[in-house]
Image 1 (spheres, rainbow over the protein chains, first blue to last red):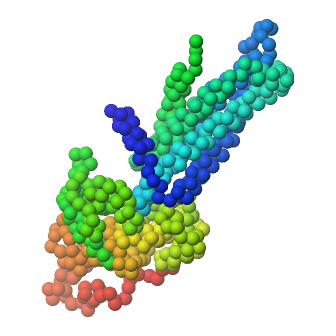
Image 2: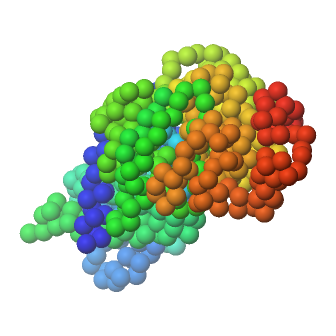
Image 3: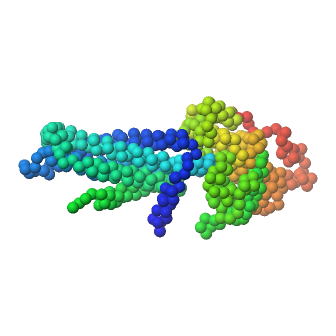
Length: 248
Length: 281
């Protein structure tokens, strides 16, 4: 029963977010602040993960492609498609669920426990609109951007590892990148990024906003938010792949 | 003026407020007192709309707050200031930004005008030179003053204070009480204070509502409370042996068995020397 109660409250929270802002400038300021926190705050970890994922993909693909009949440029194709289709959107978003999601849950949880949300309510501010909507809007803007950056850095990381270890030359890698490129894959990756961005921002916001208790409960809510977000991301990944990727 | 009519509130099977009514007038400090778990915080949250009462009405200057839609409630809330038990200052904002927040949200004033107003209310609560400090850098008493400054920055008609003295030493408590009382009179605000601090009750309690297990057990003024015959109230206010002795002394004095030059009226006289130390925090 709790799961249905939670889903109901989550939907009501989403519905409650949409009201006229009391002051557009203040909401804009909060939106920009959240863009900075979610976007620039996560850029470092996203960059590091992307480069290494691309690098490891190149080495492991080369390790598995033992047939001399397969040209080395195939490695670049595989790395490109793996990074675009799965690693950049899914893996990066799972990491972001930990980085940005836990921050959102603990920030809102702390505000709830220390009565800051009540203080905003008393002032006549719709706290769902002021506190949650800018976070979701910022995530929807910044996370797809981070995913695009992750794609580029992942592919570059693959090139770097390939040339550094002598697996293939930069020219062959670049040639491979352009072979059999399907632009739809980028559209699919960005669709996933938008869905995951909504999950990463709204689920932790829900757990943080409705937290009850003290510091211990904030920690629990933060952990639960990350776990639930990760599960939902993987579930959504499967559903979107089944729906949007033609398999026959 | 705030009128509370037959408010009831339950959480699941547990009834927390049972049929409570009260009239809280403008320009005076209205105190809700009672032991922990008596329902005073829930009653206050029902009055300000943080909890929806199960039955009854809350009237703000005759307007039924409980029957209002969310937009109408928002309009009333713009006239409410609240001082929270833990101050509820925004951690990431400086003192100046905290106080300026309601001004930025609800007015179109220039930055200079907003800053002037911030400095005006900070001076009013006897706090200067802390504009750029963050809440974590302030003492408990200073946080309460900043929270009070934020609560009054929009010139509210109604001021709610949830245990304003909790966590403060007796001297600072008196300073905060005195400030709240002065602001209430100066701006003719309807102030509602939730407390179990007997110093506050005796200092500023123009109207006192005593709650016991979710019911209104007694109501009156700070002059009447000391002579109340209500046993539960007496148990609450004379929980301290010192106060009990003081009351016994007063009774003996009244019956003529002992004499004391200083009588209660003299102690309660507004011209009597104040126990409140000058603000120096």
